[in-house]
Length: 321
Image 1: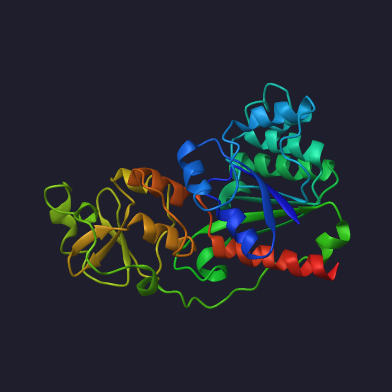
Image 2: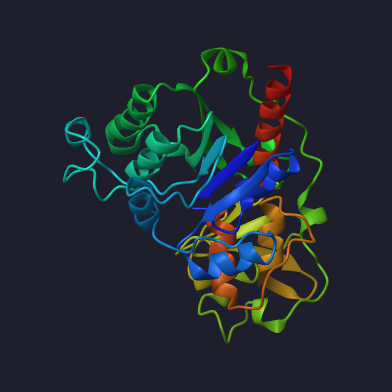
């Protein structure tokens, strides 16, 4: 089964599907730094253009995607009105929304299966309008929808508290009816297996010289095997022994950056640890670039192990069908 990946990032969704036996034959990603990381790990030349240019190619008969069975997309979420949507995909309300670009591609390519990933609050976004438009759009194209919110620490065996909504759309109703989501699994891949407590580069450590609030955190952050966060005016300890949700702005400093206590001092997570907390394998290559880009890529990515388990369920279903 061949997959086309949109908003591909560093390839987290694609990697999960490939681990389950699928093949990614086309990837689109506009961020040049994420594209560099992607191409370091996949034997694919990423289409590093705005998705609107890809849509324009398809509309004018230039098929840059090729034959595909599955469309993958972790699309950004923007508000739009139901009224605008009902006037058509290209009206003034809908033109700026990237989801409509995905739907243009769906309308032309008609993949058998669509896989979408987004933030948990997609369902309540814009008072429920956004999710309603998404489901109506897919249903109007003949798709049957299944969706569920899964937490990475419960379904991906990674010590990160990350809830995301996963949407599957099937052209075949029987396939949709027969699909089942993966079950919860025990968290055995604990923080001590992901975090390297040996000495790291000095730039990762917080000191009185590089962090203005150091004196306020140095006595509070004092336990290993837990993750802390500086929350503007106080320190928060995540007592469930997992990392809070990784974000794209982890590399910018400031508040909400995950912090840990080690024998060498208090430090932030390394980019490699952030990728590990997303379920990327140790042999996943991180190219030489500014750490801020790598933190952003990890925070914007997906939990690979959750994707793999969903894709494995799809694989079982397809073999049965």
